[in-house]
Amino acid sequence: MTEDEILEAIRSDLGPDVLPVASTEAVAEAEEAIGYPLPSLLRRLYLEVGNGGFGPRGGIIGVRGYDFWKSDIFADITESALAFRTESYGRCAGMIQLLDWGCAIASLLDCRDPEGTMWGWNPNLCCLDHALFPQDITFASWLAESIARDFAEPFYDGYFEVSPQDEAEIAVSTIGEKEEPCM
Image 1 (tube, rainbow, N blue to C red):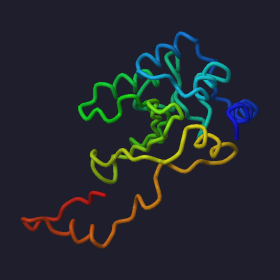
Image 2: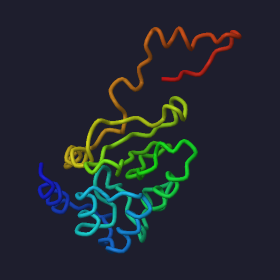
Image 3: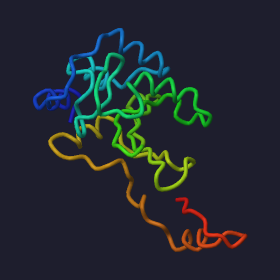
């Protein structure tokens, strides 16, 4: 699907939770906080469709002025961008939390890539070192796949699987205590 086709598909099937469009100032403030421009499709969605409340599960988070219950971690993408810029690991700088799936699971958008690479975040099954993982899909493709259907949570194939070698390594540590699995 082209950017225009995705925009029209979303516009033609807006749910009840889509908020009024964002101001150009709020979008510019978000881009300044991120340090990179938003992918053009997301920028257009905020300015032409609504300031959040669309996309998978009707839960894409908006820019400042966003007042929506579907984000438990950050109030808006500007807040997530500022938090990611100051995180000690530094690996999420230039990213935003785009969708909060619940239970600390999120979809992140990497704005350092003009196409907007999507990343998953799930600190529940492993450790924080491995909580962030690439989804090998762009924002436009991710959004196109979500139109008119439920979108799967942000896990990649094999995320829940543990290899026999991993099982052997995590079964017993050097002092004989059982360790937590780390993918």
